[in-house]
Image (tube, rainbow, N blue to C red; front, side, top):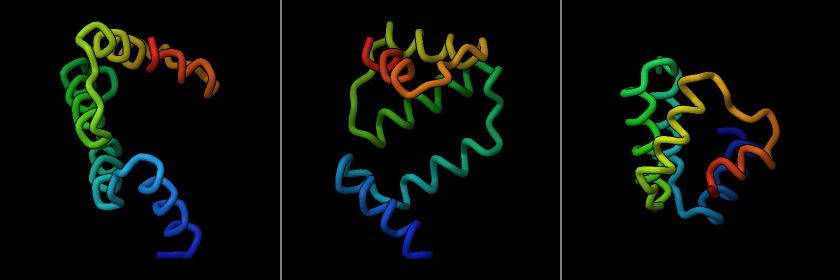
Length: 86
């Protein structure tokens, strides 16, 4: 692994306590995911919440799933952050 990748994983782990192997596992599942399929997206949201050690309410999960399946994801970080906070 390059120094840059290792540094990036170290920073993620430091800030979120997520192990690099967990990140890679999620990344691999995303590569072949059908983001128009609600069931697939819902499973991915739950997997990410579990990896991050965060509780996602049913209302927030529904909002995230709807945004992804409708291809209505925010294009900037600030708007994306609002989606996950509300």
